[in-house]
Image 1 (cartoon, rainbow, N blue to C red):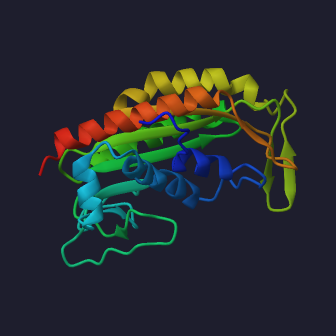
Image 2: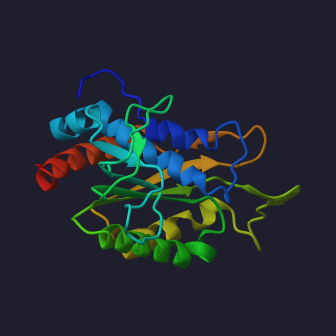
Length: 242
């Protein structure tokens, strides 16, 4: 990597889900949008010649349905693999890696965001993470499984259900910062080892006007994520030499 500052698409996209806008926790496509940027970042990093060549030749694509054709599975947020021979690879605006149906899963990514009420939902989230790894592997082959979990450390937070607002009060409804450390410890202890690579994204977002966002430690987050990308590139070459 050069000494020039690097902008990572996944981190930028994660930020944009909160920064200056209301975060909609029930919007199921947000995980897809974030996870799909992983492959743009792998290509930008350019440490896997095999992946770069296969993407350029449209032999490998991000799967639009997030599961392998002909294989029953729970959908993941972002899957990458070999294009079905009879399918068409489609390039979307803003993306270099094409989209299409895949015959297998070479890389599978799952994204979770814990913005509030973390302890209440932690067991469900951990269960989802475990089940998703099982589904990635159930399709056959030897997929590389990536887990990305965002944990909010804001001093307060507001959630929304329709037109109703639910601000945290620190008592009945704990503030994010009151639960973040316990949630992080439990996630790492009970879910991280299921994945080949796993990263916690620590941030602060109040989800209240003007909808500010900040990373807890942006330099460290970038360092950890770029290291993940480097290891993933090397592991891809090792597992899928062709």
